[in-house]
Amino acid sequence: MQGENQLRPELQDSASAAKPQQNLNILNITNDGENRSAIKRHKDVELTVPIVYGTMAFYLGRKASESQSHKWTVYVRGATNEDLGVVINRVVFQLHPSFNNPTRVVESPPFELTECGWGEFEIGITLFFHTDVCDKQLDLFHHLKLYPESESGPQTTKKPVVVETYNEIVFPEPSEGFLARVFDHPAVIVPRPLAGVHMPTITPLYIMNEQGKGETKNHPLSQWYLNFSEADELLKLAAARQQVQAHIVKLRRQLSLMSGVPESANPSSGYECV
Image 1 (cartoon, one colour):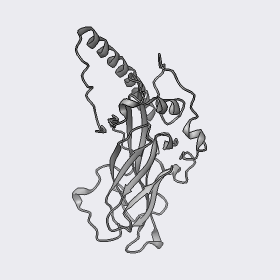
Image 2: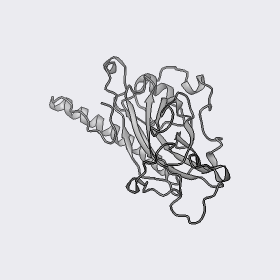
Image 3: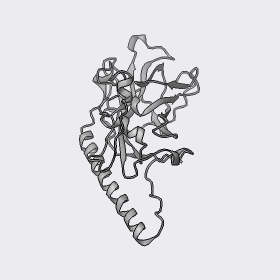
Image 4: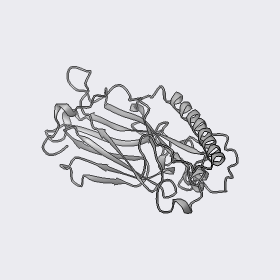
């Protein structure tokens, strides 16, 4: 933050700056746009995109001034540092009003923004997806932390303060084009096998846009990314959940056909595009 410090004690982030937030939060994206009925969709399929979003702040030490004590980066990355550009079209970061041009748009991966300041505040993070993915946006929020909570003594310039959150974005009933593009993409969990699904020949977007261009595996900050030790298990659970959900949907449809009662809408969990 560059202007007046708006931080209050009750707004302090309760998460530890030294430990990743591993609570599994499912963000269910349902595309209810006007063109939904005109697009061919796979009714019994769910695609899952694991993401990590957060901030990394470095103390400037002797270079610090009253208005600029830290250099920090806010970002959205793949849980395994893969390129998210295959799903996300652009990310909008909403900074504190004291910054010049506080609404920042990043239109290509890696989706990140670096600034300098001295105060902690909440950053709005809005994800916009490609047109064949979802026509609604996803709003997230993250509290920027500059100062470690558990350490005593003077700050160090050698170790940043890192706070990250792991989430999974679920896309039920993906379009045919979306499924074909991400079928073998490492950033997207696709349930296997896909019985009865015909895959058209489409050149994957990540190949068209230079494979690996937006991945963060070799990013300069990657050495400081938090290690989500449970990520592999979470991904396995997500894949299993997809299989169970697909089976439930199939059984529900069979029952509705047998009873002659129209199928009711599935209840959503987490975030839903409406």
